[in-house]
Image (tube, rainbow, N blue to C red):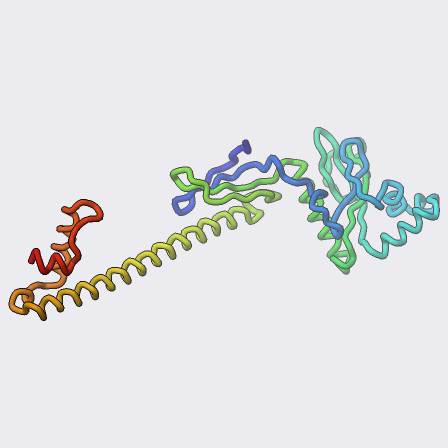
Length: 265
């Protein structure tokens, strides 16, 4: 069961923030426009056509010169389709990723490895500046995944009924929009309840008005038949007395309003 990180009361409901124990790593998103590959015993992410030899030839002129023609052809094709950036990782009791030579890591000499590349499709981001921003966002999502910084929420009423849940929110749950989404779910739920209540009130009022009109017609009929006897009877009083009469009867039994007027009044 996922651990509850925080419980937040909102408009009579409880938003339980939980660690997402079954979050997808970004490679499982199967996005062909936005992905990375890495080749290290502690961090391996592979993708067909983007092998280690291709990545080395992409980031190193010497590696490209030494590569065979099939690798060079693959590199030329990738360069036409993708912006690419070197990938490094700080590997010390865990893995933290960064674009090559950009990680603010404490010991670059021993614990930092250059291990792959990040690829952003040119049809997705036309400029390299924009592609770099996308690459940084992808690395941030990966670091959230690797660091267990992925969350979800479950919304419950105070009596424990689950209203909704949603998962796969990467990053600090206070800043990634998750709480705003959860609160909107509560707001929408309350609005739906309000509309149901209003609809019920409208239907009940409509039924009541129809009953009053029908009973009024019945009373007027009785007045026309015996004006001296029925003229002084108020409709609301008659309906109230008739309601009391029905309560005294067995369920499903009792005279109609007209029969009751004619025989009991």
